Image 1 (cartoon, rainbow, N blue to C red):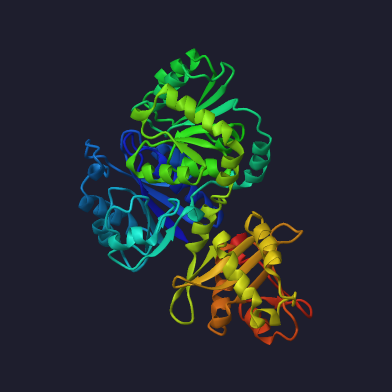
Image 2 (cartoon, rainbow, N blue to C red):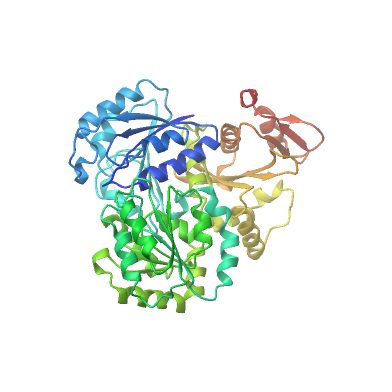
Length: 509
């Protein structure tokens, strides 16, 4: 499968759009996809950084020096669409993914073709969109926020369960919670206010912190991007600080830095979700209009304290917020850790593998999240589900919740909901076996979707996404329908109840 991203970074746009697209690109690459980028050569772009990550970048010239939001493309939308189409015409493409505030439905419609699908990544809900899928990872984002802006039927992926975070955060989440529970006093603070920070808010915040009541022994990890135009000045500020300050650029170990911090002072952008996964209480600063809603909702949930805009900051407000954070520390830790599980990138990536079912409708897999717990329980209660289950006993709600909570946080297992035209129609699961790349598969269809080709489509999708694994299935001898299904999908029977499918030949070439 081939995917191309249309995304930009600049001194005005910032780095966040590129960073979150790179996170999704890395996950798609894990699933064997070919990924490329189309990006403008804006001042402060990250095109060389993307190339260093191993991706081909189709570089667009910057012909517009103005940086108002409508001009962030570097040219008018018609020219940008034509330049993009020229690049796409040379590729056999499956998905075009667009993450850009200056692109709307006019551009979408100009580049759309039957040969590929279009997904938009956004967090503003402020213009018209024409796409097959729209992703917005904003906490508590509602379908109603987007319905007035859609000019075509699109499937909406909304909320923090689709947060595009690197695996390192989810993998460290349990250990982070253990560390937070041992908290005694705020001794270490993470300061992260965006990759570019043109207005040097970072330097201004450090200056205010110097006259707060914080101890001279307080440790600060100050995070900035490689294209920060104030880097030289910040180096001086950090060196002269009364605190134990360290300046970090081009960070590759953000999870480690969050783990060793007691609180964060940070922007209310994508990095807020990284901090939540690692249960880190935060003081949020609103650096852009699109962060206002996030800062407000994080505060309402009790996982962060909103400091407002940079111009509203004072040493006194920082002192008060730090004291409030200390007083409510464990409560904030607990609430932050429950907000999201950090597997959003995996959910989005796997969902891009699609097939057409027997009814002519698109089917894909969505990695399960807590929102799916009750639906799965209902299916598990059905007599049709229990009839050929390896464990015939009907689980209680408590037993189901315990099982589900273990599965949904298990990074080695894959629990998927089968979706057809925005409707949940079944479940498929891969559990690791003792041997590397050996998995046991389990599958069942929703009771009202039997004999509709759902399970066959799910098995097809599993093999598309997991080309290099060996898959075992246990099928009861009297389950003739399942035996016929697995045989038709290329599984071989190895004994009375065991079936196996080996990796595709091309995966080993």
